[in-house]
Image (cartoon, rainbow, N blue to C red; front, side):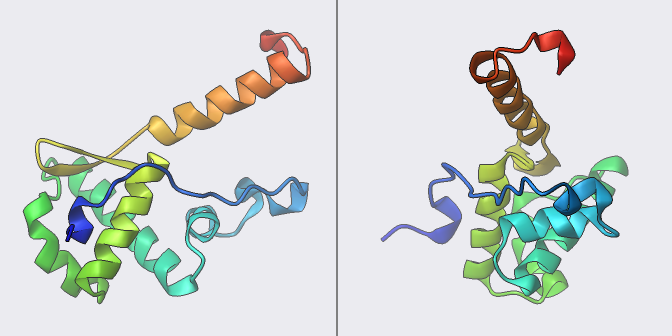
Length: 133
């Protein structure tokens, strides 16, 4: 039996919307809107946003959240262990966070992956010059 915290973090499904009215940048709460594209349930989206905010605040303060602080996180987020690790693994799979030296950190991998997809679509499929992206 494998533990949820050790489950593979291979990929995360993100909802993509082509409607310009659905753009995250047009949202009153872009962070929450992004979380709703990753998590199906509203409650999980709220907890995901809260967890990312905690990671961001602690990282900025020079006191990154340690992976062994999971019990405190369960209380803070009012969530069970399996639900916490499932949420965390989705954020890891999306490239929004990473674990380095047993610390949770915000990650730029999410942005890099989106840029890579956009660049490929723009140049390879639409046959447009990269500079015009």
